[in-house]
Image 1 (cartoon, rainbow, N blue to C red):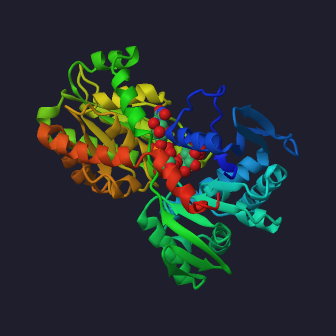
Image 2 (tube, protein in one colour; image 1 turned 180 degrees about the horizontal axis):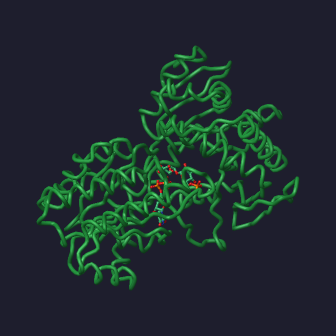
Amino acid sequence: MSRLVIVSNRVSVPERSGAAPAGGLAVALQAALEERGGIWMGWSGNSSGEDEPGPLDLKERGKITYALTDLTKTDVEEYYHGFANRVLWPICHYRLDLAEYGRKEMAGYFRVNRFFAHRLAPMLKEDDVIWVHDYHLIPLAAELRQMGFRNRIGFFLHIPWPPADVLFAMPVHEEIMRGLSHYDVIGFQTDHDLENFAGGLKREGIGEALGDGLFSSHGRRFKGAAYGIGIETAAFAKFAQKSASHSMVRKARDSIEGRDLIIGVDRLDYSKGITQRIDAFERFVKDNPGQQGKVTYLQITPKSRSEVPEYEAMQRTVAEQAGRVNGALGQVDWVPIRYINRSISRPILAGLYRMAKVGLVTPLRDGMNLVAKEYVAAQDPEDPGVLVLSRFAGAARELSGALLVNPYDIEGTANAIARGLAMPPEERRARWRGMMDFLLEHDVTRWCDDFLKDLVPPGES
Ligand SMILES: O=P(O)(O)OC[C@H]1O[C@H](O[C@H]2O[C@H](CO)[C@@H](O)[C@H](O)[C@H]2O)[C@H](O)[C@@H](O)[C@@H]1O
Ligand SMILES: O=c1ccn([C@@H]2O[C@H](COP(=O)(O)OP(=O)(O)O)[C@@H](O)[C@H]2O)c(=O)[nH]1
């Protein structure tokens, strides 16, 4: 069996061999690496003012080598904060208005990809299978090919892929499309992202769909398909049940004093629709005076990418908005919105999800949204809560038992909250069962296996 080499911007390194990783994605990737033996390479998260980062930091954990590289401060500025998060991220989330294209940042992005390729090259063996993750590293395969590597190389995009006209607004879209053609398999979260990709190739006249999921472009043939990422469903359901008795979760339960809990959990990101969601909650309370003092909306929002101006500005906007709504609607014995601006560990989140009657997941655009899946997995089968889900999250292509909303329609989302809170138990159970069965079958291990099966067809491994 070929060795697996994973490359991603962020790497999740377990403290020691066998230790449980923090998130579902890391669980699945670690299991795949453990099975085949392999390397996981990426950015250490550290930067220095030096001209050249120090050597790779190698950490051995059983059959896996974690290879971490520092970057220079300029690299982080141009590659991560600059091109990846101020051009590719907004464009892929349909936010042309927020894209800040600059040649310096674009050059930094390609330079860091070349640097990654040069750091990876000495570790690679001829028959290694390479799996690259996400928008930070699109040009990596092209760099490796230029260095002579003929290995199977796959790419999975965790965020949406936009329609042609949105993509074409990015000055270097051609370079990016060419970069993708150097992979052997390109995975998207949903069929819509795949359709957008195929549409872009056709509109630009740079490639075509050959049928059976095959594409040709820039003189290469490759497979393109949708592989919706899953979570570690069964394990998450188990620890949600256990977490219900965690002291922190018990304290939270006591503190809401029998009120219905509505929960939102998102990085502080403009793609997540947090301000529209707070507006919808306010509208819900105003439209349903009987609910005043009866519900608590808990919004957990860790800070994210704070060095990027749009994200920094949002910190103030959301905090002010939550404060304004609490000021306007609150009573001496009731604070309608609890806004938490830091990260909560997943075991505690699981217990909070389980307590919540409504899970509010209303991004304006999202690749998948794992919170939606975790909320479902965490529910008590006898008394499940209701998922209110944006039709613009990748998860909406899979979770048909959710109440689907358009997050731009504040009144519609407010109505869905009311409907969720009032939903009879039989309907809640039926909706939840369908979603849970889907999530059990399509968990993160299945996602990983499906992708790798296409990247390394049986018999070739
Ligand atoms: O690494 P950061 O800049 O701190 O950002 C965190 C991650 O955000 C994005 O997550 C995406 O992947 C999820 C799993 O497939 C998906 O559910 C979600 O919809 C996406 O937004 C990003 O793609 C990751 O690379 C970041 O590490
Ligand atoms: O305080 C928090 C908030 C979020 N998460 C986790 O972060 C992930 C968020 O993934 P999602 O796909 O919803 O969005 P992303 O942030 O990747 O865009 C989920 O696994 C959450 O459980 C967490 O551990 N603590």
